[in-house]
Structure formats: structure tokens, C-alpha cells
Length: 502
Image (cartoon, rainbow, N blue to C red):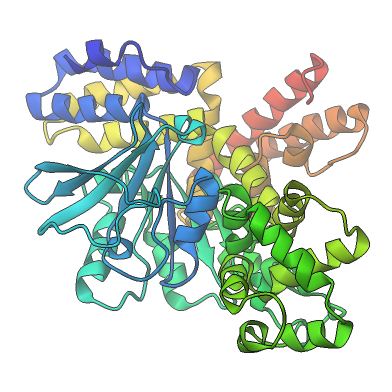
């Protein structure tokens, strides 16, 4: 039985454990079909958080996937594999399983470079499952999705299948999304985020389970961005802020990143030989360096002692921006080691902020995200039998009545507000999103860096305000949200009074 098979696997936390126990208790009380659905919910509860990386074609999704995993395994050139959904998950042996549309699986090796082969040589593929002995994948299953605007109808159809809210396909199991954009947010970026669902529960992407990365910011022309003072990274931060305003509340944040630099630094692609080549280029006269850095063609074709093939590889790994940053670092400290240069490139990529936000939004809240998605699945799985639906509803209400389950109520309220199902005044909407979108207490209160007494007083004042609003002036739907927010503030007040502020 599935429950027995999963007993040795770890759940994300107490909320997932409570939902798992609910599924086990309900299985004898529901139809066989519903019970089978509950078994799938149990399997997902025991699996790592599933994070989909989505975005337009050529947005650098697969490069970012490689940086996340810390290994160059995802193909980055447009080809057969980039038109397929690929799931990267933890395994005790590195292997590729090609899953066919009829359910059969075919095991393939990685290529000589440790990557998924460019050509699989198999017909009728549904998706790819890659198993890696990789510590990151113990916490996250990373799902690389086909790019929007792909060149053929089949890949577009696979993307739509991934986003289909009623899909039971294994590739539709994502519970969170990292959405990759480049310089312009387009209409289909909005529609994709609106349609993206967690598990099979039709839960829209929102600030609880979605962040966005503004990729390839080294291509930004800073002179076109007001307030950048000619600085590329400052221009990128300004653009990211504007895109955050456009995409919120679909995402918790938009963070600038250069995935190519992150991939080269994190996967070991940047080598000692690359560092030595950069050291030779740094030794060239200033005029030669200036000319070489004007374009990719000039960098590879200009006459100098560093072989053109070596320069081409540097360009592929770092692009002109990364090369320029490395040369600046060598100018300041000529004796920098390859490891130190790698850290310079990593810092220049902006990837540390992306990884930190993934930890804050996804890893820290994996228990609540997974439990909320699972509860929504349980609700949707209940059959048309009124008695069964009532039993499932009653069991969920008992679970949600527990104080420790309040986070699930808060996530539900956040989803209602962020999706527009419940409309509040803009300042109240912003407050709900803030309270529900970060695990940091001071951040929830909007008082980061303020002293403890001020936090305590503010939490109690807002708890009282939301309780009054729920009783006087709110519509029934607004009151439902207001009661949850009141309870959230009250629990924050209790936590602060008990000395639990982090």
C-alpha cells in the first residue's frame, strides 16, 4: 500500500503531516476513485516541493535551472529537449528516464559532458525525468518547462498541458513557480501566471508560491533607463521594480539576474584555464582592451596573443559584461585566483539574491504551500456524492479549526485577495499581501528594523482594527478575509510577547 511505502519518507512539516493523516483517515469513507486520488495527494505530500521554471523561449530558463541545481545538465540551445518538460529530482544514481505517452519508460545515460543528450532518439515522448545525486534536489524538484512562444505547435501544446488546471499528468504537479522574464513583460506573461496552477488544485500563482527573475540584465542599455546614472545593475534594479509593479500580485518579487554568469560560476564551467586567459587579456594595453570589449565579434577577431578559440569560449561562458567585470577585478588585484574570480562572477550575476528569495518564499514556507495545495486537491477530488463531499468538508473544517493550521487559512485569504476573488481597498490589499507573503515578523508588520515594543503595539492595534472591520462595514467575503488577518496579527502579537521575534 502507498501509505506503507511512504512511511520512511519525510514530510515538509506539521501541516503536511496533518493533511496526510486526514487523507489516510478519509480513504475508507470515500469512493475507490476518490481514494486513489488521495493516494496521489499523499505521494506529493511526501515529495520535495516542486518548483516549475517557466517563461518565454530564449529567456534563459534552462541556464537558470543549471545554476539552481549547480550542475550544467539542462540543454540550453533550442532543440528537442527544450521543447519537452523535464523534471530534475533527487536520485541515488544519476540517470535519465524518458517517459512515453503510453506510460512506458526508457532509461538513457547522460552524454559525455554530463548533460541530457541533445537528441533522444525516441518517439512519442511525454516528458523527461532526470535523477541526480544532488543535495539541492533533496529540498526542491525543479521542473524545466517549454518556453512560451516556442517555434512549433507541439511544444506550445505541452506548455498548455502543463498549465491546464484539470491535468493529472505528472508534469502538472508544480506547487511553486519561478517565472523568468527579460526586458519586457508581455500579455502572455500575465496570462501564463494567471493560469499557472499548483498540483491539481487550480490554485493560481501568487505571492505565496511565485517569484520572477528579470534575466539577461547585462543586455540592458543603462542610458535608456532614467535614474540609472549609466550603471547597468542600477538600471536592472529599476526595471525589476517596474516589472514587479506590473506582475504583482502574481509574484512576490522580481529580481534581476544574469543566469549565464550564475551558471558558469555555480556549475564549475569557469576553470583555471579561463582565469589564466582573462589574466592575459588584462595585461593588454588599454586601447586594445577597449576595442575588444565593444562587441562580441571584435572580442573574438581582434589580433592578440590569446587564441580566438579561447576567447570564443570565454564569450560563451561570460559574455562581454562578465568578461568586463572579471577584467576590472584583475585590474584591482592582479593576483586573484581562479576561485576568487569565480566569486566575483557569482556576485556580479545577482544569483545570491534569487537563491535567498527562493529560500525565503519557497523553502521556509514549503510546509504551508504543500499542505494548502494538497487540501485544495482533496476538496476537488471529492466525488459528486453529497455525503462524500460533506464528509470531506467536515474533516477539512476540523483540521482548519486547529490553531496550528492558521497558516493555511492565511494562505487561503491571500489567494482570494491576490486573485481578485475578494476585493479590498488598495491599502488593505497591500497589507494582506504583506502579512501573508513573508515569514519574517517585522516584514509582515511593515516595520523592518523597528524596536520590539513598537512591533508589539502595532500588531495589537492592527488586530483590533481588522476585527472591527470584519464586524462593521465589510461584505461577507471581506469579513471572511478580515477574520483571518485579525487572527494573524493576534498570533504575531502573542509570538512577540513570548519573545519569539526572529
